[in-house]
Length: 119
Image 1: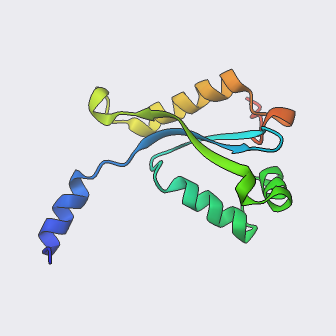
Image 2: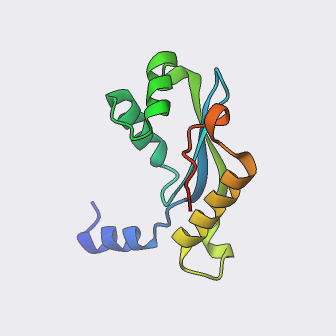
């Protein structure tokens, strides 16, 4: 059994997978794009919220309820390799990457679940 110090050291060395993902409706091809600082666990969080009827995106929740979990997929669009980047502000970089994907794919209205932000 590992000591508390060993466990802390392992935790400190652990690097989360950071990047941009999409949830795709396989029936109508609508997509939801978002960034995450933990690509390994974000899909579980979204599935939990959707299966519980608690997801903040009302249209995605409605379609999930109508079509069911088996008709949605989770896809990583881009991952930031932490060792390849000079900055330590990975969250800022991931947010910029998310904005680039949103600009390119325009996941609004009939094409997606993202909500267009007015600036």
